[in-house]
Length: 282
Ligand code: FES
Image 1 (tube, rainbow, N blue to C red):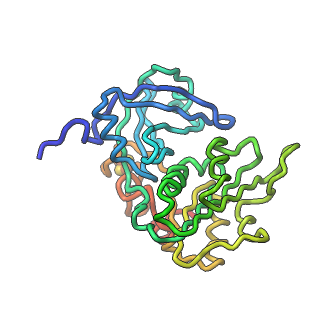
Image 2 (cartoon, rainbow, N blue to C red; image 1 turned 90 degrees about the vertical axis):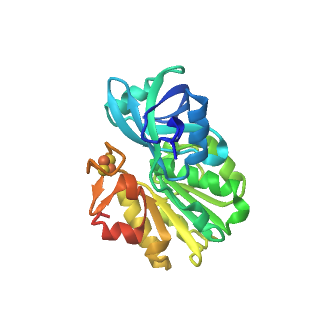
């Protein structure tokens, strides 16, 4: 069967920046669309929560970005922190500027296999970027899931991501809990690490028939995993995404190798049970 260029995820496609907005210091969201409408249509119908793209910034290089939008939204964007040559250059882009991308890549979260389950999402800091898609997808398909609990923590109120989304999630559809490590003047919410929310009076974390999504900085990840295991979660019911430097995206170059797995083709989504067997330092 012939494959059209739009179907070929390995072929770079031209994308055009529509708008940029500041999220928190050092972090921006870049809204874009693919120049060719067929490519755009194909992309919107194939990407899912937990997948990623390889983005080429002309003259700078190619780098990996996860996809924070949900396929239920009908739009695409990246959220990125200034961490290197490519991300610095991309944050300076203006509407109308062009870049190239390959993808969507990766296994993504198998969302349909979670239908009928309770959901717990635990995110720390910019760990919300790869989990935003999951949350939006779940809330857009709310009747397919049982209880939904979202726990999100950041260093301080100024580093809480996706301010507009947080307002929506607070309004309903899920139990939503927010915390910061240290408060600023005028902040009246919870203070403490994200795992402290599990013990907050009135909170009962659902464990049975539940899948827990966890993403965040390594130290937060370790403590949250311990908390979840102490609560009785099975390792196979905790899922996360791995970040790795990627080059080919097709399991050939070895840059994303973790143990015997290639994050680009076997991941980036793994259960905690799998992560332990990969030899990942967690
Ligand atoms: S990026 Fe080359 S093997 Fe994964």
